[in-house]
Image 1 (cartoon, helix red, strand yellow):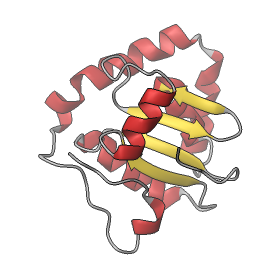
Image 2 (cartoon, rainbow, N blue to C red; image 1 turned 180 degrees about the vertical axis):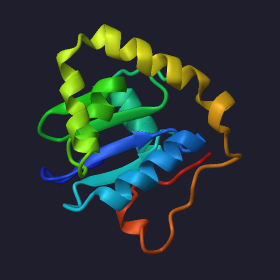
Image 3 (tube, helix red, strand yellow; image 1 turned 60 degrees about the vertical axis):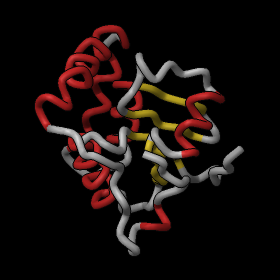
Amino acid sequence: MISIPKHKQLILFDGVCNLCNTSIQYVIRHDKKNTFLFAALQSDVGREMITKFNIDPLKTDSILLYSPVKGMYTKSTAALRIAKHLGFPVNVLPVFLIFPTCIRNMVYDFVAKNRYKWYGKKEQCMIPSPELQSKFIGKTNA
């Protein structure tokens, strides 16, 4: 099992999704406290975490947030908890956590379902630059 330091959080994302990759690049640029590590869902780490937490990739297939202290978050909850660690104005988005998860996830699922149609898809997962390699864990097989 992969070991994540307690002060870090792991973002698992769809490595072939253009929207997801653009979002991850945004998080990297705005993660001033170096809170996050990253792995594609298609990587060995991604598959291991999906299995460990019994997550159905057909129902949650675009973003997960794992905290060694608080566990696994999915869908809109994951996205909003990530936003909390980024700068203004994105860090105010967690105010939407006051809405019921089912309502937030209806919006999230609509975007997730259409993301390839709207933003496109890569043939293979993003390969991080040498400067960013330390932020990514796991070997990608897609």
